[in-house]
Length: 198
Image (cartoon, rainbow, N blue to C red; front, side):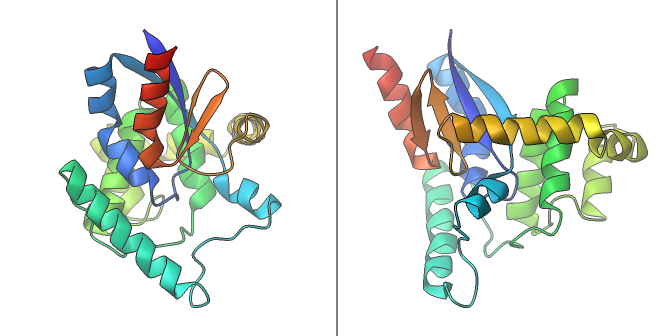
């Protein structure tokens, strides 16, 4: 089975589209996706690139929300926009994702978090949304927060971010097959086509 590395940050708006369809793509194309949470915010700040900051980029921001809404409809699901953005608890949301990937519940956490963000308007890693998600996943909130805020998880978060940058990742979502980098939800199919040419 071919494998694609899926680099993402909870907080990236377009990643909602990928997260919501990646399971079906995996099954239909017989491809395994390796999920890697990282801080796209840190990479973009290091690159002096701060996207969609209102009101100075309102035209671009308005386009983004409408584009996500349209693309979601193309894929057969909904996006209620604008969603809360940017996230107040960006790092915590991604550190919980890393913990979840380590413990086997990460994909469900990320998928649920994104659906609640874009379909119910509930901001990731904030209350009461976080408690509701962890309860739905039968997880103890106190335990999760202690582990997610540990130096071990923080080091892994920074390590993922550093590795992402070294691999040529500058945005979320990014798909990597071997050394080929495909940035953006709309490049997932290109990545799969590229695999077919190998």
